[in-house]
Picture 1 (spheres, rainbow, N blue to C red):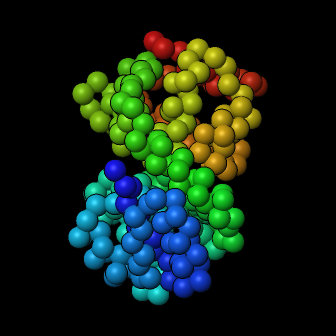
Picture 2 (cartoon, rainbow, N blue to C red; picture 1 turned 90 degrees about the vertical axis):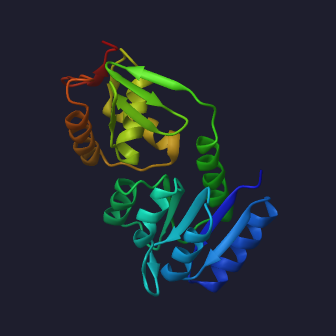
Length: 220
């Protein structure tokens, strides 16, 4: 089945080159140059992945997040500058990845394929403590209750679930997050996300601080 991509970009040069490259890879690509055109496209059919420029003539790529999340569309954001505020906002909104302009076509293509592979992966589950993780749809449950995690909180939980009982240093966690999805996370930002994850997990999972070393999560 041909995977459907929505590409929202107002720069005609970037758009024409990338649409051509994506179509050569076998994807169906719908190009929209502004928020209004993209909203119409989303209302007409469902897309597997949306590639969203942040700065658009009539708004920003963030204006499309709500409707894309409702249809279960994965998202990659394009940012003109490596702005931490936009990057954090993108991941908190549910983005799967971000790419900074100017970008190499090969890099963006690799990230597109990686997001789509994760999206179409086989149904599998992980469990840690009192939490169940459905990897195929990215949903997390504590008992029968669904937990609302941001994309980065979800990947942080996956990192602990894949290393149950092991002490992970902060450096190891940062490297694992980078290797799994190309996400750059600063050390201070990691502290914030671990705090938020603890608050959302409550007593279902105990993220233990090993003083002077890192963190550990046991499967109990």
